[in-house]
Length: 279
Image (spheres, rainbow, N blue to C red):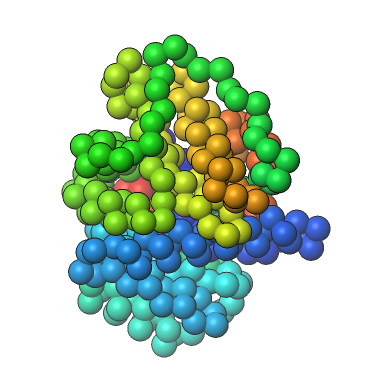
């Protein structure tokens, strides 16, 4: 995805048995995040439903990664009927969506393969990693005011290349303050980065991580991740997790902080092209 989207969504495959615990941490963190956002979203098309096979979620925003289907078994063969019903469901809401699955049954039915993301995790039981060195002009602060939250939503919307969803992001993230902590990075007073901690009983999930392209290599991403981890430890989270492009822009930063790969997440897109998500 685009240079701002360092971590997004999940719904993946369990890997080898020795890594089972870390996989489950990522999978549960994914469920906690999307359930929380969808359940608390005030947007009229918001929805969340779990079945034995998958989770159907919608935050109600006109941006594909905020709506979708997460399979418990990504290799499950999807039936023609459920594909048609799911497409009709999201068409009825007039929303694009993604389907977290490796099933090729979606091909030729209006879906486009979107790529593969990677789930990572870190054990927090032994404390935090070393605090990264940062530039003197950098400030990381928790968001409490509506003004900061609007700035946060603006940065995310612009970074994701979906400015039309800015008001939706504001409404969703304001409502999610019931369960999440949002962070804003400022460099010499200029807002330049964002991150969210979704704290749950199994893990602290790091989401919405973005750094303005004009302020890279100043330690902003590292500082945002550390702030989220610090908050996760304060809240008693035993593990941390995130989803990101495989060994892409953020991989090195997370690896230095002790994160390791846990699982991978292929997905298909409907209602928007995969190329548009990469802008």
